[in-house]
Amino acid sequence: MYKHLLIPLDESEVAEAALVHAEGLAKCLDARLTLFAVLPLGAETRTGAEASSLQARREELKEYLRSRCARLVDEGVQCHASVREGDIGEEIARYAEKHEVDLIVMSTHGRTGLARWVYGSVADRVLTQTSVPVLIVRAEGS
Image (cartoon, rainbow, N blue to C red):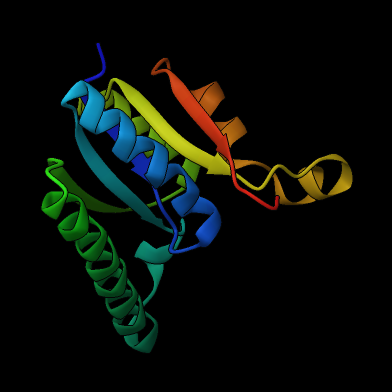
């Protein structure tokens, strides 16, 4: 049923909480994982020093995802990494739809009230923008 899992990561411990669950599912279901990161919207309009900084940030994210994939591959899990630019929620949903993802596995800070209203919730945006099932993991300590 679930053969391709998408795991959005942002280099935080909160985001990586989902990785443990995704790895377990991948091993049980013989599924492949795509580790996914998004550079913020508006990056494409930057020029000069900002553009080179953006390129450096893109490379940092790619290396971060590659290192996580390498560990997973060592554990016998098929893994791929992808970095995109744009709105985080939209890019997660777009990638999932385009690449036949069966399940999105992501974590949340678990914010409520004013903090949720002010900061928004990537998980909420993903849930409303995709028809792909989403497994949301609440990060420990959130």
